[in-house]
Image (cartoon, rainbow, N blue to C red; front, side, top):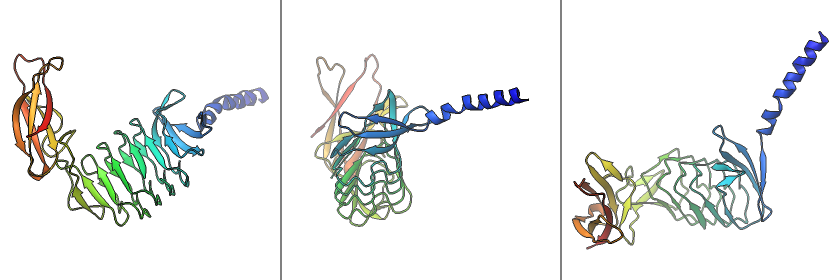
Length: 276
């Protein structure tokens, strides 16, 4: 009987270490700062805590060979000396209060890839004056910018995300590209305005046409300014380009859709937009 119990306990001990090893890891950077992290179910990295003094931080794309995809809850909370943060494209989610209380934070760079902004992610960032979110963002939590008295502009490069509760603090205006969809005269309790650009651009998606193949044609949305005209030009060889005007559009309400049927006996087309 004693032998049987000894074997049973030994098996339990052998099974325990993997669960312990999976809890937290640590990565020390050249500047002495430390990321505490754990792994997600898919093997990617979730940042759990940051320890360090640098004023400017760039989130790493990988730690120990694993891709960083999520910034967890309160990772940078209370770092009043943090002034600039850059978030790479592999990150898809910013957690609850991830940057809460970062009172010294003007500059936040978010690469296209982030889809979810957690509750109160930037609460009490009192120095933050404006921020731009890429078109990949689709979900906003509650009170993302609560107690951000300096925030004047929140800029969106894509369609309107789904908002939960009151997203923005008082005083901010929400700006969006003409031609993107889902916007009305307010977003999460704040007024909206069109974000007119200095030059015309092609959007990934929008009211007119999503970028890419649709049926037997190639289509995209052009955004710029209201009631101005743009010319879509095309060529088939970038090595020796000959740009041919194929369509002139007036941007009613600041945008228009473009679509061209596939050309027979053509290896492909390249497009550019010019003002008339």
